[in-house]
Every structure is written in C-alpha cells, then in structure tokens.
Length: 160
Image (tube, rainbow, N blue to C red; front, side, top):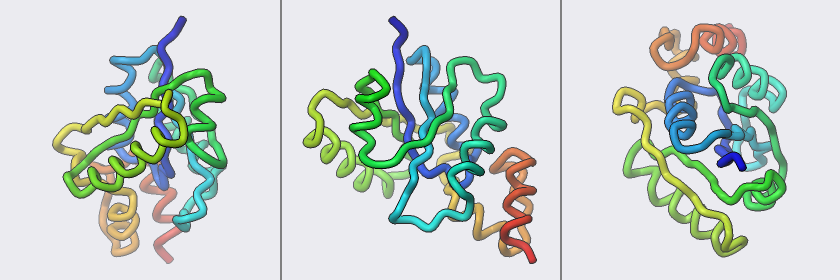
C-alpha cells in the first residue's frame, strides 16, 4: 500500500517554497495530494480553477503529485482520501503558533489525523504568496520566487 499524505493550502499563487515542500514530502511519501482550499477567510486573487491549473503546470514532471481541491474541513477531506497525514510548511517562527493551533484543532476533530511540519530551504523561508503579490503590484520582478508563468499571471491580475 502506498504511503499518502495531503498538503492543503490556498496556493494563491504557488511559490518555489510550496514546490520545495512538495518535493521534500515526496521523499517520505509515495503520493502527495496537493489540495487547494475553497477558502472563505481569505480573498484569493486567483479562482480555485486557476490555482489548480497553475499547480498542475508547476508540478508537471514531479512523480507522485496529485492536484485536487476541496471544501470543508481538512480532516474530513484527508479521511476521504484514505490517509491520515497532513503536511504543512513552516517558514518562520511566526508561522508556528497558527500552524500548531490548527494541528491541535484538527487532532481534536479527528484524533487519527497526524500533522507533519516541514521547513523549506532557507532561500525560500521568507516567501509568502501575500508578499509576492504585493511585490508584483509595485512592479518587482519575482522570477526567483515563482515559476515564470505564474509571474506573468500575477502581472495580468495586478499590473494595470
């Protein structure tokens, strides 16, 4: 039986930091479901369909990646995908409190679900989708943060 995990997130947009976490997780798991959340708390720049499409393109050629989207609770989605592991990325200490709170809440909702925290390469540890969007809107070149096609999509949405 294949070892499978779920990497949920908004991925608005996917960054090299996300891709690094995907590759690292695949050294542990045979399959990684990268699940785009239909988020209601954040106002995403890209639609769910756009984010799924960008993730598929950004991860093309990476064996073991499955791109999907979901609504509702992560723990329900993970259980429905016949796994019990959630992968989350930690960039900085500032991420830890929120991620720890979420992991403990998920454990309370389903004690069979485990959360694994992974850190990206140091070169990506400061990246966030929010900062990249802000940089693009101010005219910055973000090719070292995101794949080129994502930089182009960001420009289409943010630069008028």
